[in-house]
Length: 354
Picture (cartoon, rainbow, N blue to C red):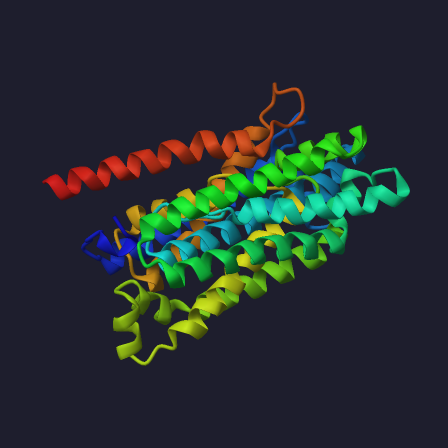
């Protein structure tokens, strides 16, 4: 079933209420992300710190301002970016299973980073620390090049083979092939490099500092704005390329812009946070089901807000008190994302049967 195949009745007032509810959940989870962790900080103290006043315990200021606040902002923007990238790809390929991980885009970004690591460490014989990797602009370029290359390959195949199922299978095979190449590079890497790459691959929203956010957030905002500018053409593409052309849409130009936008969003998030699983696939489905619409005018902002909510929720669960440190974010996103997709599929099946 394609995203356009689901039929919903649109209720404008209910939609506005649901978007408002998502916005309130963002605020709640954002505050909980700052307050909750190995050290619990009272909400009143958080307000004092954020407003520039001294906290009851000086250590709380460093925890909030230097650790939890950047991490919460990173989770928000990463979740929104991955959700929108997944929505664009599902619309472009007219396939509900399209996403950064399924079609190999995240694997391509990982390949770019792995190649950069190998070339960096061969002459020096020593790996730079993981914090340097996630903050190095060269890694962003490498991840973007890998993701963009895979997307171009997928689009070239999509132009040749019109069957979405064939494209999906080829995309999965590309992901396997790219993963195999990454494995070969890891085999020839130093032990320190391999350990750092594995940690990077587990995903984390905690590796982006304030200095790195100065690049991370603006790049994602550019991609999100480009996606918002494509709302009308994407709506036309839901009904097929021929229909879009009859409406005057330059499908080739929109396809290239969609590739660039989704590639930018996925590459930046992957470079700074590692490959984040399932958000790009699950969030668009969650947004469509919640808003009961396939109209991108509603689904696009719904996906943006839903991505923020789910990413903040996953980050909160990963840092719950009682855990020895933070759990890998990919473990949490997969545990939450997989049931969401299964629930939506079963719910749609019940609607179609009734």
